Length: 107
Length: 237
Image (cartoon, each protein chain N blue to C red):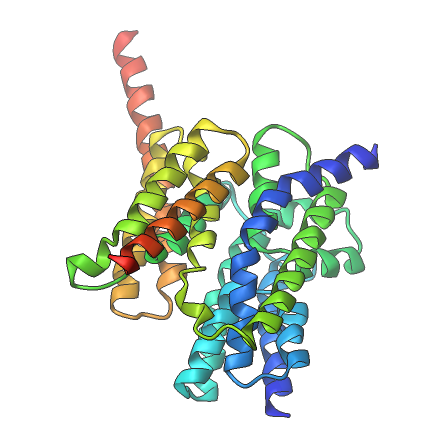
């Protein structure tokens, strides 16, 4: 039962964060300066999300720079600039990652 | 007319929907490991529909964290959606409350990313486009979770296969092509570095702090660039 309560509480929190500023009744007018800051939302948030996955937060360099993550991330960077379709970058870099990870474990 | 918009919405979000499959599988299997029933695990994706918050809560549950820290974590991780909604707010004025509620429900990183990319190409905001991409993503996310629930019962240690890299690859593919000028580059660098440092010290609000720092960095560089060009133009005259 407590898991269901947890689920509902989570749904309320996440939905509120999404809906709150969409509401007409929330009386916020965004000025031109705030709007210009907001144009950087997508690159800033998405980068803040992926960097700690690729570079594990740690004080030991060998944990921060893991070959499979680093190489696959570089492949993703290059392919995403070469091809307009992001799927190519995602699929190929993930394949590289899985291959290197496997290789790494075996050796 | 709606047909071509639907197609665009579907095909633009399709790569991201496929890329998120490993992550959805991970969420499904983690939920089972955390002691959820199959129905509860599926409901997690169906009603919460927030990948990183789902992973965080499952990790916290396994670690035995208390309710306060669970709620705080979910709130802090979700807070980036406040930014997305702030960006989308200007397009909401013509919509009814029901439409806005539905829009809010499917406002994810991925839907936001494709909607913003489309807007940058100079195409007018389309509610229909956003819903198609939002719900396409929703269906993939839930099917992937379902697969994870089924697999999670069979494959142990699914969470140690590095499936989370797929989501990193997706976000790289969404951000890197957009780095076309110094302001965006600054935003990305600052957001990445601040995010990494705050994660190192396990600071819960790190994500939103990093995002805001990056956004302000981007804006600052943009303003500085403007000033230096107007300054140079002044010199030439």
